[in-house]
Amino acid sequence: MKLCLPLAATCRSLICVPRAHPFATAASSGVGLGLPRVAELIGSATPGSVVVMAGAGVSVSSGIPDFRSPGTGLYDNLQEYGLPYPEAIFDLDFYRRNPKPFQRLCKELWPGNFAPSPTHYFFKLLHDKGKLRRVFTQNIDSLETASGLPADLVVAAHGNFDGAHRVTDTGHPGAAVPLEEVRQAALHGGDAEWDALFEAHGGPVKPSIVFFGEQLPRRFFELARADFPKCELLLVLGTSLGVHPFAGLVGETRVGVPRLLINRDRVGEHLGLDFASGTDGWVGGDSDAAVRELASLLGWTAELEQLV
Image (cartoon, rainbow, N blue to C red; front, side, top):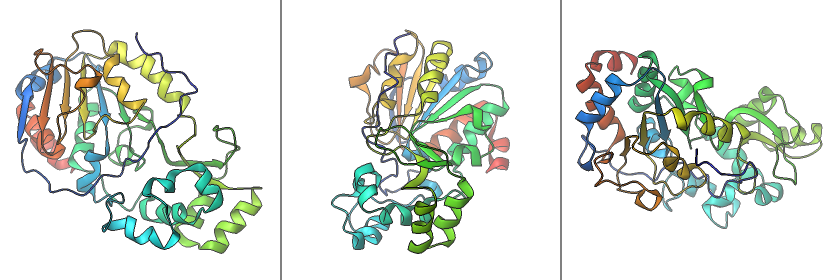
């Protein structure tokens, strides 16, 4: 097992809310390992041997709002707070000085505002068929579990809204805070409610989302070390593989294990993906279209559409 990421590794970038882009209606291009062969591999896979890596692209059709692109969505809505750059909303030092932009984003992104995409439901179907080992996701939207996936099969590398804690100066989460208190402040409160929450707990609190400078969850490393040696097929969907240490997981499979990237852009060759090898493949376009094609090849279309 090659995984040598230290448990002290911190999040270098957790901006997993996608830029808006037109949806492809089908897998539009590709090279190397293709969907027909991947469908065969899924069908013959040992139970619990398919590992998924998911990025922002799998949530685009769920309506998760863009916020990095100037002129659209949340970015413009947050400018009144004087963000020096969009990513500052997830910067721990900035949050201590000015928590209001993130508090507003909490209300926008709190689970329950968005529905899972067909891609999320395909992950659920992989589980229902006994093929899925784990989903490692960069996303903070909890749409994997909203699709019906058991929480123990999902690793949220950058955290999510499933917990809350005190903010510390060490990069480690502080004392746990009742999630319902944070939820009430986020969804139904204003500045006064957040201020009262901070005062009640002796300082800033926030949902358990990994900010710049915070430690990634220990569970991410522990399950990566446990799961990737047992992976027989790696599906990588909707990610540019530019966020570390998450992106490094593509190199943690055993030699010769098939790896399929489903993403608008061809990426990952700098991480060892070899699309000329016959073992790795890239399918360009929309992940929803690609998983629907996989479902068709597997004879799962009716079951997928029933979930959706």
